[in-house]
Amino acid sequence: MSKTILITGSTDGIGFETAKMLLSLGHKVLLHGRNATKLAEVEKTLSAISSTDQIESYVADLSKFEDVEALASAVIEKHTQLDVLINNAGVFKTPNPVAENGLDVRFMVNTIAPYRLTQRLMPLLGKSARVVNLSSAAQAPVDLDLLSGKVHIADEFAAYAQSKLALTMWSRDMALKLGEHDPIIVAVNPGSLLGSKMVKEGFGMEGKDIGIGADILTRAALSDEFEKASGLYFDNDSGQFTEPHPDGLNPQKCEAIVAAIEVCLKT
Ligand SMILES: NC(=O)c1ccc[n+]([C@@H]2O[C@H](COP(=O)([O-])OP(=O)(O)OC[C@H]3O[C@@H](n4cnc5c(N)ncnc54)[C@H](OP(=O)(O)O)[C@@H]3O)[C@@H](O)[C@H]2O)c1
Image (cartoon, rainbow, N blue to C red; front, top):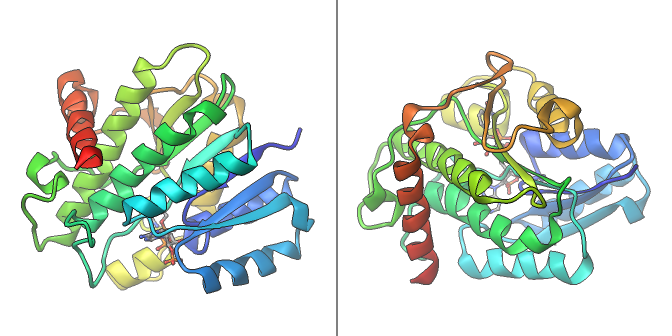
């Protein structure tokens, strides 16, 4: 049966490859990008492998709260049900590490925007729905002052790794608090150093086949092996469900992350 799947950051890299794979399997894909021109190009390219009624496009810069809200509202306006939300959009190296709202852009795009989007789209996500959050092998203990934009650091990798652990932590906290009629929420490291724009620009290397990432996201979105994965972390480097950084299994620390995100959303 055709599913309706929203993939954030589907204008490039793993998100684009995943969109291609899911469309070729006959699913309806809601594309998302921050750049309207690039998004239109991607929609045109993907129209070649699918009928146009299987593709929709949404523009939103996830470093801006108003865009996150507008994206959620636009999806809610057109849909009463969403089968899968893949929170894929992410940023590592950037010339503008501080977003207009004062938050570190990694935390805003990689952690806080997907939290808010998931929260807003929850009414569309029923019992058999899935939320797939793009984690990473890069995970570091979270400085709540950095998450909250009270301090800033120059170390891009440190900010990225913290933002990815924070995403993994809210995923677990939200998953464990949901009931049996709610979607599963799973955090997935798609594989390290896959050859996307992020890896080429960030690490100056070609990287591995990004199809590895698209394949695991497709499995996380659709396959039975992820049916009971709510609250878990899948590491595609080892090819198994495994433990994230120890902080990711600490309920108090996970709750503290969620509380700090909620404060950011209210200010
Ligand atoms: N590649 C890897 O080895 C690897 C490993 C672990 C985890 N990941 C995670 O996998 C996800 C996909 O990464 P990738 O490697 O495919 O990187 P990528 O090629 O750089 O793609 C990132 C996507 O996110 C979008 N994006 C970035 N900033 C945004 C913003 N402010 N608002 C809206 N969209 C924004 C990009 O849009 P544009 O097209 O406009 O740039 C692009 O579509 C990320 O969450 C990343 O952290 C990747």
